[in-house]
Image 1 (cartoon, rainbow, N blue to C red):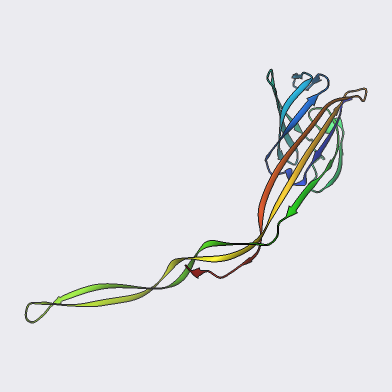
Image 2 (image 1 turned 135 degrees about the vertical axis):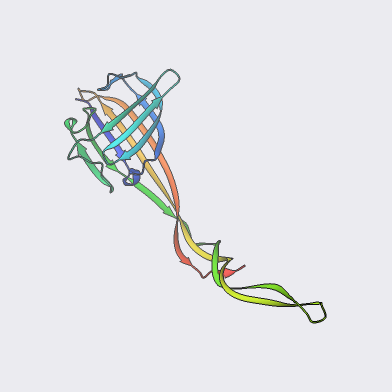
Amino acid sequence: MKFLFILLSALFISCEDYNGHFQGLEDLELTNGDSIEAGDYAATLKIKSKKKIKIKLENDSSKHSFTLKLKAGAEFPQDDGTFDFKAFQNNQELDLAGRINTSSERSRRMTTLEPCQLRSPVRYCSRRCVPGRNGRPICYRVCNDNWGYNNGRQEVDYHEVKTKKDISLQIYANDGTRSGVMKATQYSKYKEEVYRGPCRFR
């Protein structure tokens, strides 16, 4: 029975693409009748949910796309660690075992200025005129105070967090020999906010 080793990240459950390389050491037969010939392929994995991943393989001579679906009682884990699925638990009839690995690094504390809006009283004035006794208009200024918004800036302190997610995949034939190897990586980053100052006028 074919054996598949796959290394996932807990944060893969986000419908993102992970790009890498697949080396087929021998021909592979899928349950949909597709045959993947031995050779080198550019590889893309998309984790669509806890129960489904989509794999695309492409080289100069062929393209392949297939979906791996887990059945009831089986889910890809959300935390780092190992997992084990049997052939009857997925649509491709593969034994699955693997480990989740996620690494990240945090930058020093950094500061930036971001736009903001400050609610404050705003005075609106207009000029009004009325006829005078001598025929000349008498004009005066009328002002009203209302609340409005003014553009400002605020200081924001943050750390930039970079996350690396690796996928390492090995496929084994019925006799236990390795028939394919795949590695793919996805990088992401986000801001971890630690301080947001008051909004001030520019």
